Length: 234
Figure: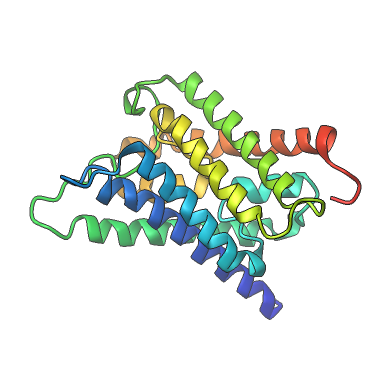
């Protein structure tokens, strides 16, 4: 095993840890804090900021995926070696679980602590807006597909150098602004897995959707980009 491989896995672990801690932490700790509550806009921005900061800090090491669906989508688009997927996905999931564990310890560190939904994803009765499973599936597939198209376009050789992290982070912010009411926004199976293991029991039973839909969406986004938008020098 090359030393650089461990560095890539470490970068993906840390980046996904930061995305989960920063994004979900904003929802669990700050969104409803009396006199401060940052609400939907604040949580959406927090997720975008974790990607921006993580991409610029860790992207040069691993590519800054921080998301199993993104890694699979990049592989489908020919931008990432499929053989590297297992190591990346395991690192991402472990990073998200570690972050959720840290967040749980912080969130329960006061008398009478109530973690509520713990930033988990859900549909039906567990959707913030009570949207059903079909709506949740469509939302997660479409949002992830668009996310992959933006990632592939922003990181193409012809794109403006140095701005990919900003474009991707702003895209994730917009995705959350639109889809938090529907599913509490996943588009990232690792981000969904970490909180589900520490949150309400329903989150694990509904976790399948937040693996299947983002992965399907990522592959669709990759196919659309390759068929309609890519150049030979991508």
